[in-house]
Amino acid sequence: MAATPPPGRTPQTAKSPSIGRPRLRVRWDRVSVLLGLVVVLATVVVHTVIVAVSREPSAVAARPTRIKITEPVANARHECPPPAIEVVHSAPTDSSDEPATARTVALTFDDGPGPSTPAVLDVLRVNGVHATFFVVGQRVAAEPEMLRRIVAEGHALGDHTWSHRIPSLSAGWNSSRLTAEIKRTNKMIFDTTGLKPCLFRPPGGVVKGAKKVARAAGVSMILWSIDPRDWAGPPSQKFAPVIRRRVAAGLEEKHPVILLHDGGGNRAATVAALAGIINDYRAQGYRFVTLDEPR
Image 1 (spheres, rainbow, N blue to C red):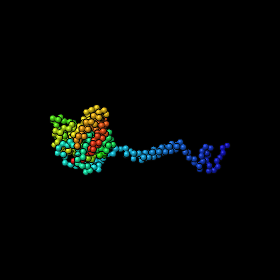
Image 2: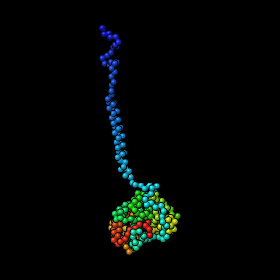
Image 3: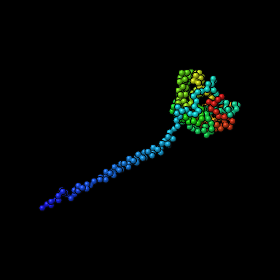
Image 4: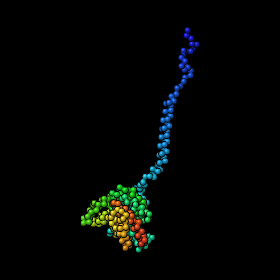
């Protein structure tokens, strides 16, 4: 005979929970997974923030310094003095701290910036010498940071045309073409450094047809007095003594302008000869000058 439940009670099985005490079942496996995802997400966020903060200064420092054209360098020049009437073959002589009779020498480098330019700059810096670099516009476009280094280390700049195409000596320069080459290179130099070049050297030393164009462009035309033909020998250190000996011919002049090259090919021989050239002229009492100094 079945038992009759007391009044107010309903039949229940042994496994059924009582109505008065509900039991919550927690899925700990799912909770663990959720907590794990939260921890991973928080770790990623924190790591990202730390890396960004810690690396930002070094990342900025690693980027090369660029001169803003809206804020030109301190010695930026926007106007040139009146151009020289004749082609210049001698180094400047005027100085506030040296007598006008003192012997001066100007080192000049053509056809860069090129692969040898850093080595040339290193030798000049170690020896405390400033030089004049006649740069090719296409090379400036390819190596703007190198041009900025040239300026930052105190050297003078000159225009050496955009393409370095050399006309025949008999035909000379086409005036409209040369005008465009000078103008384009000057703009590239100014846009890169904030400096307006006031010097011009025609490729190959071809003067015919260039005088009038240079004066109209407001630049002085510069040639040289000593040409060791450093480009004409093998690019090895064995050729360096030959270059040095040829450059020493300028020791017979009071104000020589030395033609050398930092571009247009491998200039290892020029680099190897440079320190000796500087020593030779210093030993004879010459003062090294740049071609943009007063005359």
